[in-house]
Length: 398
Ligand code: AMP
Image (cartoon, rainbow, N blue to C red):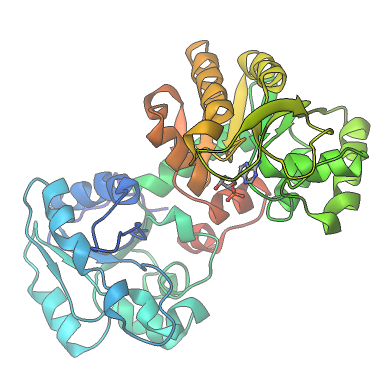
């Protein structure tokens, strides 16, 4: 298989599928450029090899064709800055004669960004004709968008057939797969997964799958209360999915059967309002009064989580254990972050992934203290579930 390290990019127009789906504020300023930075090693390698990167990405969820607010325009200058002043141009579209002409005229060392792929419905439908038109803009295809690798879209998978030999992973996907395999294939034990976030429903498949792999499973955040209620506790106004009470019971049963140490908060920081001005008190997680809701882990739970994390050989962390966006309820997630960093210092391999977790580690400065941060959400979860990702299979020719 071709790899980015040994491919000769000299004089080549390299079509790279990246995940530049960055958050923009109302002034179209990039509020977090992690995903752009993640693609830099690949882009630089192509430039240094004498090629021209032709960048393909989606941004947001445009519904019916082109919309200014989903244009990739706001990324042009920032990418140029990140590349030390390289010339970065943007095409008015991602397919068509004009775009092809621009791609043909790109000089070695220059970068061309194609306009948002999702201005065409054909992209997400995986349309072969559309993929063929995209393919006309380059001499080789580099897939570096791990975030969309679980989708069989035109630019992430279908396009592969137009580059039977000249196709490869970018450095980001290469390193994602290597790091994930450290967790999925040969974890150093004990292996601890920390699953937080709002709902059980969005994480159920991965939780069930992890039960076959982990030694410890810490379940935190909003999903705590579905478990607490399933066990007969009182959850007050806490977020709780009544349709998933049986699911929660079943997870607990499976954990016992599989010998997994399931760790769920025993106390929580409850609040009388979802705000920084709320009154708060620590209560047992099954004794939350009416009018109060659990918004963070309590001190006893934090101590329990820490003890498990600090003894771990492999840690997978997805999702905050409280409403970390509000400072008053960020203590539990910060304590988890510190424990993960401590364990990593002592030799554990720690992988943090999922949109919110990445924001969290960046916001609280844990990024340098963990082994690997995955920029992917859905793709990460599907990989951990053991599924074949179309964007990976397409490059491997599977
Ligand atoms: P997810 O996307 O499922 O990982 O959920 C992340 C979100 O869960 C964050 O925005 C948190 O604010 C939220 N969250 C964490 N703990 C709680 C909680 N106890 N109650 C309500 N929301 C929570």
